[in-house]
Structures are given as structure tokens and as C-alpha cells.
Image (cartoon, rainbow, N blue to C red):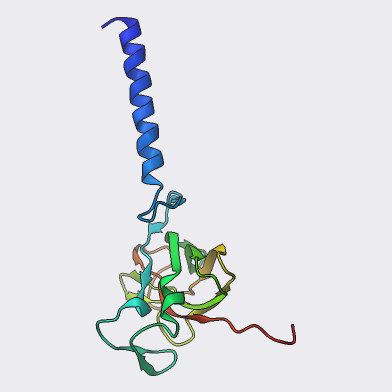
Length: 177
């Protein structure tokens, strides 16, 4: 191969890599996503929508009622998250996620900052959930301090990071506001 052939091959390879990168940051609906890399020392996570499961009833620990779906199913379906990861921050575990409300109305969400260490699952007890209200089409980054897991040494390996949506409902505007 000549130098020109080598240069053309390098340019073609760079263009293919660019096209592959652009294609990889599009989701199933064709919308742009930003999948930031997991920071060093963090455990990559998976976003779960527990209230979107229609096949079996569930027991909501923090409310104490059985429920099959979000209080407002369309609102729950409109909540998505990416950039999910967990890491230690001193003696606490930090659960990070970027959440987006694609619904046309304000939505209040209840999230559980779940993660697993060698001593078991954490972030799931009464009082662990976090309530977040999102404006229409709002996207925000959350860093939830999920506490210090019992019977777990600081800095122990986080085996999995699975924060999940427990409930979603329309936010009622305060008429006095």
C-alpha cells in the first residue's frame, strides 16, 4: 500500500468510528442520550421501573399497600433514567442517576436507591425512598446519599446498583402559588 492508500484507509476508519459513536448515543425512540462513562471506582448501574410491572401485585414497604402500577401509569411510563452508578463517598454509598420526565405535566416520583454489597441488599427500607418532582420535559441529575450499609466495611465492593422507580403521579399545583 502507498502512503495515500494508508491515509485514505485511516480516514475511512475514523469516519466509521464516528458514525458508530453517534449511532450508539441514540435510544430506541431516536432521541439523543448522554451515556457518560462510569467514574473510576464506581459500579455501573441499571435503572428499574418497579411500578411499570403489570403482571403481578406488589407490596410497597414504605406505604404498606398492595399496588399493581404507578398511581398514574402514563406519568410512570414517561420517567426514564441513564447515567446510573453507585460509589462510596466516605462512609456512605452515593447513588447517581440522571432522570427525565417526558410527560407534558409535572410528575412526582418516588425512587428507591437500591444497591447490593456482600452483606446483602441496601437502600430499600422504610424511609429510604426519595421523592422528586420533575417539571414537564425536565431532566435532572440526582446524587442520593443512600446511607451507611450495616455490617459492611467502608469501601467494600458494591456488587450491583439498581435504583428504581416505585411510584409516579401527577403533581397538583398549589392554587395559592
